[in-house]
Image 1 (cartoon, helix red, strand yellow):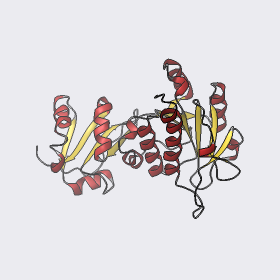
Image 2 (cartoon, rainbow, N blue to C red):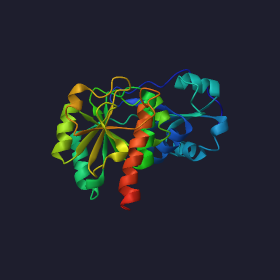
Image 3 (cartoon, rainbow, N blue to C red):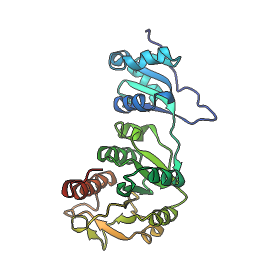
Image 4 (cartoon, one colour):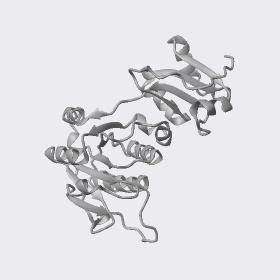
Length: 267
């Protein structure tokens, strides 16, 4: 396979959104779980042995692949953090709450599937890291408002492959989501540092939604009015608050401790 210089990203289809994913972990998981969505692969010569099965699959399925230099891949990805590989693939679209409700009803363990709602979380690095945390703890679904930004290459890379294990759903608004969740019997707990119950002194119900607020402003007022309880992670107080992705890891860790380690009931 000879090297080929690529001067830019391939043109996007007008019908199906496409995204250039880059980084070894996300590309490995994408190839494992959504191979049919792959359009084109870019790989450095150094990474060829690691991605040989994928390149062979491309050759056998009339999918384009290009062996490029690290410098050329930096231009293609628009980032120095490409780790030697990138994949142009169809971008997963956000599904509706109706779709989520059908999925929950179809799963026998639905009573013990907690949810996470992102109320204004915008930073792609935080979103990607949150997806990594969700995948690590086995939480399969995340919800946000329909105005949230589409999945980005930066978020996908930060997820370290976790984005391929987490489905994203869009609600009309935070209030609409809260009303929908309560109609299905979910308790809604929002994170807050003011007038809140301490996380480690709070019993977390099986059917639970954690609401994560904006990185700076916290929960929006309309969503905060809908939560059943505000909870706080105890800290030293030397800094104002935890990073939202760090807080997510602590919340999910405590939920797992209460429902798996204490009760002995795995999900």
